[in-house]
Amino acid sequence: MLRALELAMRGEGRVEPNPMVGCVIARGGSIVAEGQHGRFGGAHAEVEALARFDGSPADAALYVTLEPCCHHGKTPPCTDAIGRSGIGRVFVAHPDPYPEVAGRGVAKLRAMGVEVIEGVCREEAAELLAPYRTRIEKGRPWILVKVAMSWDGKIATRSGDSRWISGESSRAVAHALRGRVDAVLVGIGTAERDDPLLTARPPGPRVATRVILDSQGRLPLDSRLVRSARETPVLVAVSESADPRAVDRLGDAGCEVWAGPADRAARLDRLLGELARRGMTNVLVEGGGHVIGSLRDADRIDEVHLFLAPRWIGGSLAVSPVAGRGPDSLADAAWIDRLALEVLDDDLYVRGRVRRERPSPQPTA
Image 1 (cartoon, helix red, strand yellow):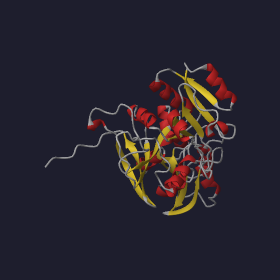
Image 2: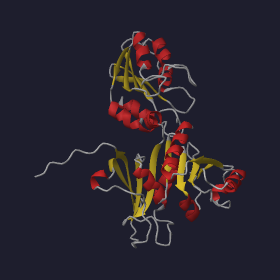
Image 3: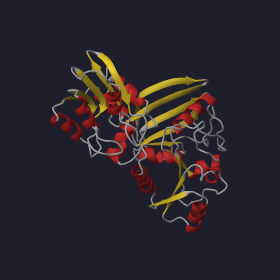
Image 4: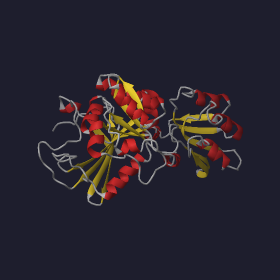
């Protein structure tokens, strides 16, 4: 199953909005065939593995990281392919939360006389499937936050200068992140101050929609975002009270304009639901501090990518990465776990996931 999980990771950025899935067929402790879901609309992992399996099904077992589908989507049901193969034992790491599957795949296999063993490496599979599960179960995308900051926690000087805090290697990793997500999101302050393009260079497996939180529709028409909107999608999220003339100008320039409630928090939540409805699984947030702070206050951040550069900026007016209200108590601060650290030239790259449950209190001496 661990090998199946490795195979599943190959689909990152290529299979969404489908889940990443890997499959292994083994006999007598040896792997005899393997496959993974390689691209959206392509064959599922089980079908790929079965296509490479040409031995007798006797004593063979199939290991798959997600419950096999039992419905007709872009491809036929995987349960039917497994049933036709004659393989009599299937190990499943994690159930599929998709409503049309959700236990029905396992039930169908058992009705065919296939022995199904569930929960093998379930925790590892749950971590792999977290973005897909968040979209299906919570109705919003998985939110990744990317921050490049100095050692003293600043993302820009007091004048707003931020180019470049991090080095070339860090920026290359950031571009790779853009190349595997469905959307890159920033606030209007970042869009006006930095005039970013927000594309992946070089391109990755996905082309992310650039999403701008811009309540009044003031995104400049001569910005790089607007000038490139006909080549790479730009979605401007405005308030319902935005000037219709500003909305029309952005639309005429090639941007899509989406209108939400006047209340900032409600508008952001409604927007995330809309992105999920469109099948967007992963959204990368690149700033600014007010946007990240709003998401932090609403407990909507799932994953953090921090590039820590060996610079010392200082200044009470220098810009910090996270604004918003923040918690009253340190006990309510967000915890980050599954930490990974990497040195990129002179920068320290730290990434981790936000832990929803609180850690157990440490015993006192």
